[in-house]
Image 1 (cartoon, rainbow, N blue to C red):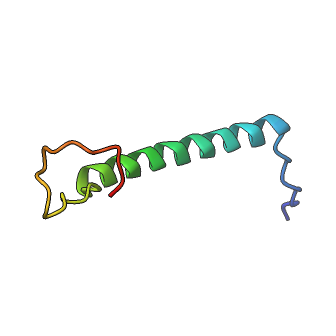
Image 2: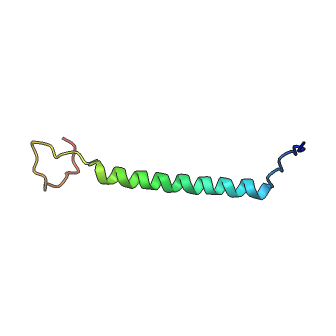
Image 3: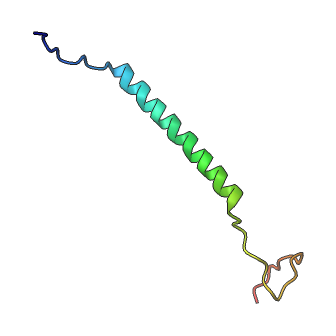
Length: 62
């Protein structure tokens, strides 16, 4: 019969490397998601119906 051995522990470098890889993957995925959202969603609101789109803003509150 074969003897079962205890699995070898991963060294501290392996854990650190896998955490960095996970962080890099999450950063890349979030950047891709932000890019896709920016391309598909139009975040700007339409201009007010009583103003022309090219009109400048005033400093004085009405």
